[in-house]
Image (cartoon, rainbow, N blue to C red; front, side, top):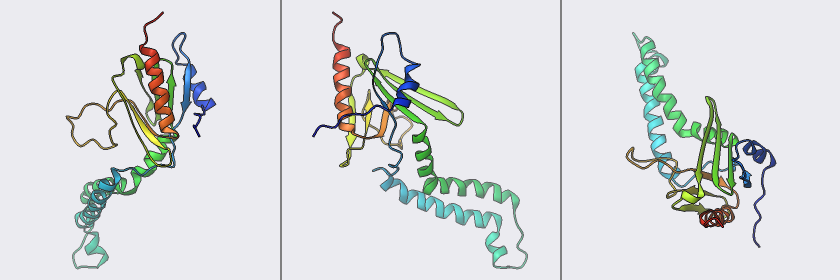
Length: 202
């Protein structure tokens, strides 16, 4: 049975204010906030646990809390060590579990849209609204990856990349719909829109 993409009315209303003359929305929606674990996390989690463990150990040593808690003679708290050690400990905690809460929060503030001309992405962050778009008639490729439950990610304009870029020399990440429902159906819709956008005007 073929799935039918359902447009989120609130998302469509938000994008309607940004449309060009004659442009129409084919679909609008949001990423699935329940999906927070991805394939690359199998590699990041062990690293984050190591980082977090060493960071906590370093924090205890830098502040001399270990000596204080064990009541070693002459032990005194080091405020400067707390600043430096605390920063590394916080980064370690973010990688272990904080990033999953951040990903969920970010998804709840992200909107996606496919129009008959463009891909549109809005992300409402703490510092303001971030917008990105790509025109279908200039799009060299559309790539996607889908899970068994139909949730997947779609990249518009380049190969689908993970959440963690290994090299600074890597090309910029193309506009990407992350963790959307019925990803294969949306992928086929995007292909159809791109084919229509490339047709010569009558």
